[in-house]
Image 1 (tube, rainbow, N blue to C red):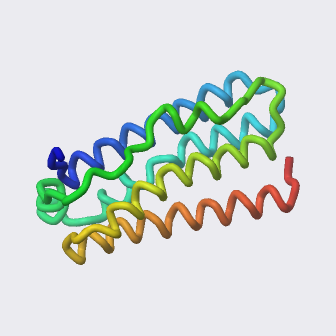
Image 2 (cartoon, rainbow, N blue to C red; image 1 turned 45 degrees about the vertical axis):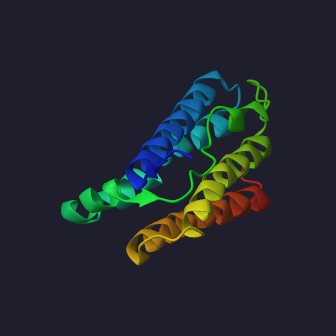
Length: 150
């Protein structure tokens, strides 16, 4: 078993969030639906939760977190999360929203794996906060879909 630090986990999260942002940007450019373009453009700009959350913490706390090792390497979401999603320029907004929920689930699975490990309370709280943010995103996505805005 190879040791991994919280910093390495967060590097993977940042890379995945960058993939999300690029995915939404690309889809926004390629979509033939104006509402979908606006939706995915918004989602692209708001896909960096971890970076936003860390920017609110004191630098010394973040520096400490990055060095903390964890016992078990969690399953890291990557481009495979995107493989289950078939999107074309004709894809409707509801399908994009469904895809967003699937991609959020990839991140939440990672966060939950860290929370279940023996980690410092402040690190557990950080990952629990990330879970809450993603859960709130999912609620918003489901509300948008239910209201049938697009």
